[in-house]
Image (cartoon, rainbow, N blue to C red; front, side, top):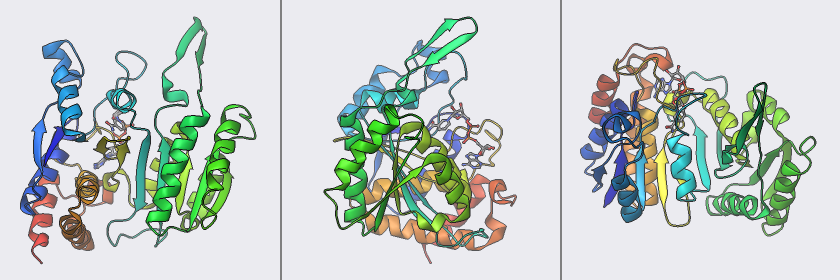
Length: 332
Ligand code: NAI
């Protein structure tokens, strides 16, 4: 099976190399077509996303990517946002669950965030009204809100989940968030067997750090989903452990929640677990659940021993040594 691989920049190449080794070790039958994007490509070719990358994604329909740095306040728009928009990858799915026995404030946290990926303030409609005033437009449509809602409810139904919670700020943004909420409410009516709950985003953030076990499946808008998934990641061990994917009608790009981590890039300090778990989501969606199970078991075992912890988990292990140990643990 051929999958497009974008190794990204910052810690991207390190965590991608680790993920490739693990997939090879389980003989996953995934072959990669490697094409990069981002600043390094721009320097050589004058474009951030080369045509051959678009062609490869369109041909393979599946891609997995490492993080890519986005400059703040100037330069190109995010490549991630660009790809999600171009291929209408409307569902950003982020499972929030600890992959190993870590010392956490809460055990048993296990919820999945369905974040609408194409609208909201991420639509990129911004302008500078004057030198001192800037404007960003928030777009919400019934069609796209219902599309993400259906994806969340269907996921809940298929995976034995009990509850779907919609998160908005509809009390203040009565038009935009009000429309999102009304749209999701309409979809919820078709799923009477699932509990449907509504919560405001500020209360949701508080509940998440006080009683995170109450959440099961969350459906929300683009910006709230982005923030809440980082918050969720913090509850279950941090960004170094959290996988994710972007799904469209017949295409998907798998990518972890974390960014390019410039503070630790090139130092062999990154935790590759998020990237490896992201590959597990790919394997599972492609029917290779046995391989994914094997990897998840090895990750669990590796995280059982604190000597294996990378710096983000409070240890001093390197990305490459962590990977070596994980591969050894595959056999047990
Ligand atoms: P970040 O996720 O890169 O880093 C936040 C903190 O988490 C840093 O302290 C970093 O060292 C740590 N961290 C992240 N991943 C880690 C890992 N695997 N192992 C150990 N520690 C890890 O977020 P930040 O700093 O806001 O963004 C950096 C750049 O990445 C920005 O240009 C941003 O736009 C981009 N970005 C790209 C994404 C993507 O390509 N999917 C997603 C998020 C951000």
